[in-house]
Length: 102
Length: 128
Length: 110
Image (tube, rainbow over all chains, first blue to last red; front, top):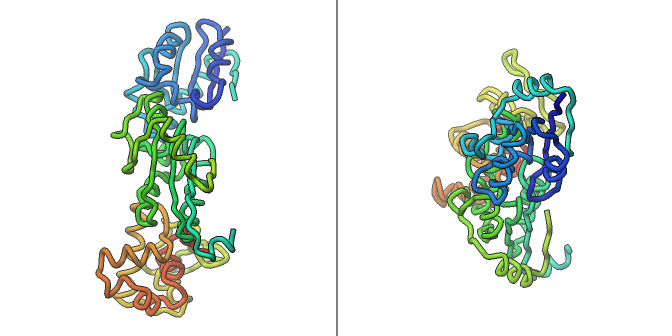
């Protein structure tokens, strides 16, 4: 049994990502969406932490929300997988619950 | 306000942009407010700090995937409205792994300390 | 309200501005102009096309002051002045020409 966590707020502005990382269990999927995708990028001051998180959790970022913000999907941290909307649906189906950190 | 504008007194205005562009409506609302207020011939400054620096990131494409209007080209129209005093906070760029080369308009990059000083010189500060 | 020309219909707001800029074409422009009491000449088209280019580049319709300045820069001071533009578009070059160009009401148009 695993959970899909979604995070939709900027990690620089809100504590949603911290709360999520503090409560997700090893092996859970974490999908960054909307302003949450900023946390996926290399070269931010969070990058080391996110690279680490990708070793404990399955880390994903939504392609459309990266592109909207001018964030290059090729520049996400190691271990983070970029998915499209269909991939979002697949993740929701593959996990037994969805926990939206709003 | 109206009497002040009519008396011809030019005040130093600063619009402080601290939000990323598409997750909330703040960025677009401030941009529209700035374009409208340009008619009043005030001394307008725009500051981009914290997540506000993402507003002027190059390469935004919210239409093709997310179906939202891309208003980032409008920041390049500000010059035609005689709004040319754009300031970006250095620390905010660095925290986000961005540099001046990632931005789609010419700006002056200031340290947080200098941004604070500049804010202190304003007559009116409007947040967003 | 809506405009209909040659079997095509385009929805407009209560002031006559097109709701969807992508529905615009030159036949709608001529029709909207006629509603405004304007017979489109090459000089009118020059301004309307300029506005469409401005919108494509900046995603806004310019305020009249900004339009005048931009026209002056591109087409020279003989055209980039209030007198010339108001003769072409008597009810306001920004507002009236934008409507004919299928653009939204100019930002900063009070």
